[in-house]
Length: 327
Image 1 (cartoon, helix red, strand yellow):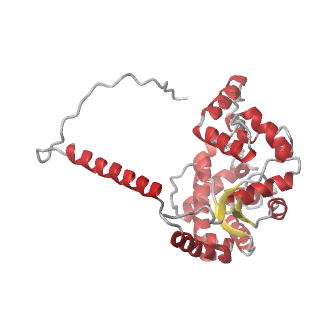
Image 2 (cartoon, one colour):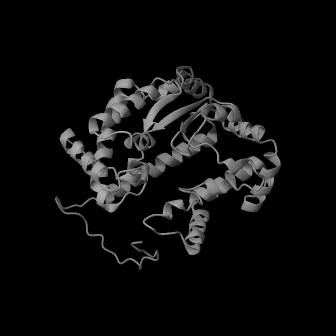
Image 3 (cartoon, rainbow, N blue to C red):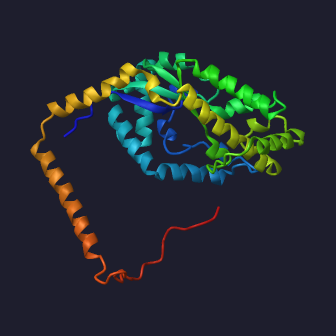
């Protein structure tokens, strides 16, 4: 049986800590679940989040499974009761020396490297984050901020492509930047279409000649009239980024440190060979195997005895109790 507790970890997607996280009133549980208690994503299309939406977001967050899992994990580390009030109070005492608190948590999980998303928040300093955490930090370069910065400076697709490639090449030359990243799924979706340059060039001309050209690619929400052409340009640059990442070898996490990653196979082998299988572990293995065998038997039992026809297994179900809406 593998024993992995001593295996060093790499956190492969980090956002640096919020600026308020060194304050005694900071609630660490607010950072768990998608979006946490952040409501700005609801501010779009002229809609301003209401108090009811803010309250509902908080309710949703505190009912999520990951929230309760985190609450018990953090309480276990802090040595307090697993509830929000106790955690904030216990954390305030330990975080009085904030750097020591952060480094202690990292040592507890044996984390040896951070790979940081440089797209949010802005102006991330890897050196400052390293100084705080005491472990090496490497960067993921988001391409969307790059596109937003060079858009207003270029009037043609050729110019945009050249400026984009120069920025990517410059980033790739920095040993601290180990990969590119895109959040295009949040902008125009994941249906990426490779398009002819002439089509993309026409789309860019349309956008540049339109009334919304200035700062267009720095926006998350763009005017409806521009969306199709914006998608064409974004899709084109994502494909270009993929080509560059292959050529410049920026997609390999091994650039986070060959010495660190080289320890993993050795550590696994050492822990595996030195760890005996206890009687309790053998019982769990037998129980899992029994469950697998029962699942296989159940599948065989429901196999149709008539070739080409499935056994009829129709039954009435109760009315679904979860409300469904389109909003």
